Image: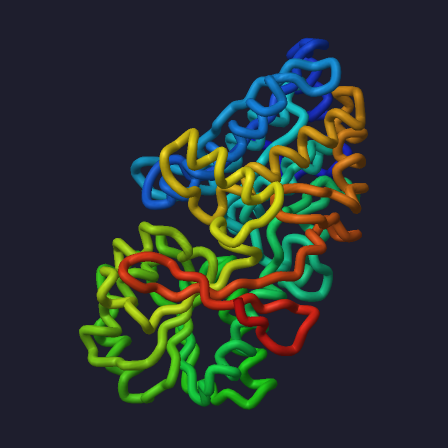
Length: 407
């Protein structure tokens, strides 16, 4: 493991020694991804990896003067059934120690990003996330004390993300609830980086716009059921129950227990639940007409231009429509490939700087760029409902507009 107890100068010296032990191949660049390839998030990570592979295949395995090798790494374990700090740290160290690795696509979970970001930062290795949304990873003053500086031990940036952060999703979700006539909410979260951070932002915005917050509780995601909690929620009589969390942290079970408890309120969940596995785990009948899911960007069926072309290629190749995050995996890989091509070198800092300088990316997600924090300039949030066992697009919420835009 990296000896974190030592000062940065010692860490840098350690890094140089490690990197000096393995000669680089001047004709090869490696792109790695670190995603939960085991357990309940596998379906979502499968579709992200497919998107990455499609980008590499479209480049015909070459970028500039280099041939490309893609490595699909797992940051989860069978025993845990989800990502672990140990697995994510091991992936980051493996990438850092291989001089041919010039880009790291990940992570899926914001908590995992907190583990690998400072490790990769030591080597200026470009990190492109297709899915992280926690605000503290990039935005000064919006996260925990010390964020995001704690993830940048060199003082330099090397992390970007192609998905909008939760300072968009949390508040706009509350605004949507207000527009739907919601007056009283009960808020739950999974007490993890992504889920709790998002629920806190939703909570704050509700109070600002006059929605009464009846309670805000963190669940134990290892629990098998939440019947006693739902009895308390029912007694409070909310118009809407909001859950900050994922399918993997029991979003589906909460929906089941809500129905069992006789709660008739709407149920709202974030993008961490926008996958078919969530519907399957909850039971489609328990979500029908009452569950709404937010997502940072457009769902696959609403993409246009290069986005719709990607969806069609994906459908032809895999025989099904992609899950929501497939296009983000594809876009993340395209960002890495563009940065490598424009740098024309394997120098990690040069590649990272080219990615950070992107302001006019014309991709599958539309035309966008990165801001000074490495965040995407995309500002669109979508809301989908669940009908007949499938996600059905409802409306677009745009941060630039005060009102929702109907489809």
